[in-house]
Length: 427
Ligand code: FAD
Ligand code: NAD
Ligand code: ISD
Image 1 (cartoon, rainbow, N blue to C red):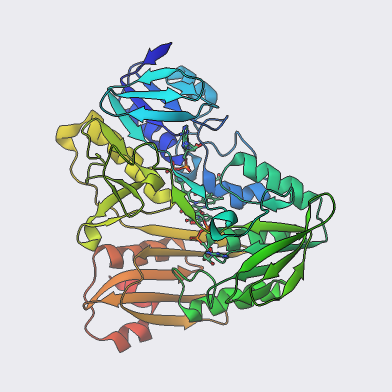
Image 2 (cartoon, helix red, strand yellow; image 1 turned 90 degrees about the vertical axis):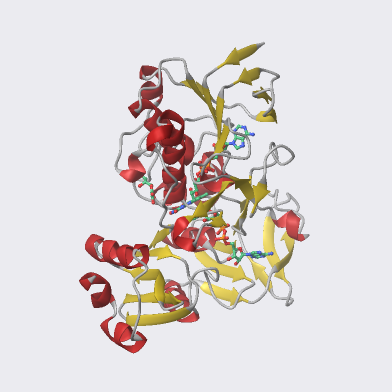
C-alpha cells in the first residue's frame, strides 16, 4: 500500500505548523501536501507546555495553542488543514527513509512517496539512563518534550500537591518546570552539575539574580553535583534521589531536563550531518536537492556569525527556518539565503527575559540587579554580538535586537556600560 504527495513534511511540531501556513499562503493545491507526525494532534506551540499548560488556574489546553498563535498568526485547527486540503497523517511514526527513492515507510508499513521532503523531526529529551543512572521509567519521574509528557506531568503534580519535587537539570526545562511546580504549591530542590543555572547562556551575575528570586519562592539549589541513583518504594515509585556527593534528597516526584538530541537517525547515513543536526545551506536544503531540513534538527549557516553552521533549539528559529524552506521551495528565484538573528527567551513567575545573538567575548552588565531591571552586552572584536535584557518593553527588546543585528561597533566600553539600555535605545 502507498500514497504519493508532491510535498511531505516529516514531523508535526512547531516547524511543521509554520511550514504548512506558508505553503497555504503560497497557494499549495489540495492534496499536494501531507504532514506525518508521531503525535496524535496537529502541530502546536511546544513552548506552552512548560508555561501556560502547567498553570494551576485556567491552564492552556488544545485547541487554544495550535500553531501559529505563538507568532500572532492564524490558529491551524484540524478544520484549517481540511479546508486547505492538507493531509494530516497523525499518530504515525516513520521508521525508515530512502532519499534516493524518495520514499518514507511508516511503522505500519505504508510507503509514502514525495517529490520534495521537509525534515522537521525536532529532537528527543535525553534520558538519565544515557548518563548511567537507571530507573527513570518510574511513574513519578517526568520528562517534558511533548503533549503526552505534559499531561503526565500535570497528573503527577496533582497527586503531589503540597509535597516535594526534585528537578534535575538547570537549563530551560529545569528553570521553567521549577517555577511551574512552585506555582502549583510544590516545594522544589534543583540539582545540576554546573556552578550556576542556565550555564550555557547566563553569566554568574545574571544567574545570581534568578537563583535569588527562586530562593525567595522557596526553591533550594544543589549545584555542582549530579544524580547517581533513585530510591524506590515497594511499588516502584521514587521516594528519594541520591547524589554523587552522597546527599539523599527525599521526594514525591522528579522532573528531568538534561538536554536533547536532534532526531537525525533516519538520515544519518544518507545526508550530511554536522553539529548534531542535518546540515543545510542558507535555503534550508540538505546535501540532497529534494530534501530540506528545518527547526531543531537543522544545522544551518548563520550569516551574522560569518556563516558558521549552528543548530538552534528554539522556537523562533523553528518558525523562521520552516517558512524560509517553503519560500525556497515555492519561490526559488525570489528566495536568497536566510539571514537569521538568533533569538532566545523565557518567562518564569513574573519575570521575563530576551537574548539576541551569541554570548561570546567580553560581557558588559548594566542596570539594577536588585530590582530586576538589568541587561548585558557581549562584545567580540570591537562589536556587539549579543544582548540580554530582563523585564524589557517591546520597544526595548527591539532596540537590543537591533544593536546585535547591526553588530554596532564599540569604541568606549565604559561609556556603554554607563549608558546601559539607553545606548541601544539611541541606535
Ligand atoms: P518539534 O516541535 O519537537 O517537532 C518535531 C515533531 O516531529 C514532533 O511532532 C515529533 O513527534 C515528530 N517526529 C519526530 N520523529 C518522527 C518520526 N520518525 N515519525 C513521525 N514523526 C516524528 N523554545 C523557545 O524559543 N522558547 C520557549 O519558551 C520554549 N519552550 C519550550 C518548552 C518545552 C516544554 C519544550 C520541549 C521546548 C521549548 N522550546 C522553546 C523549544 C521549541 O519548542 C523547539 O525549538 C521547537 O519545538 C522545535 O520545533 P521543531 O518543529 O523543529 O521540533
Ligand atoms: P538545556 O540544554 O537547556 O539544559 C540542560 C541542563 O542539563 C544543563 O543546564 C545541565 O544543568 C543539565 N545536565 C546535563 N547533564 C546532566 C546530568 N548528567 N545530570 C544532571 N543535570 C545535567 O536542556 P533542557 O533544559 O533539557 O531543555 C531541552 C530543550 O527544550 C532545549 O532545546 C531547550 O532549548 C528547549 N526549551 C527551551 C525553552 C526556552 O527557550 N524558553 C524552554 C523549555 C525548553
Ligand atoms: O512562543 C510561545 C510561547 O512562549 C508560548 O507559551 O508560544 C506559546 C503560545 O504563546 C501559547 O499560546
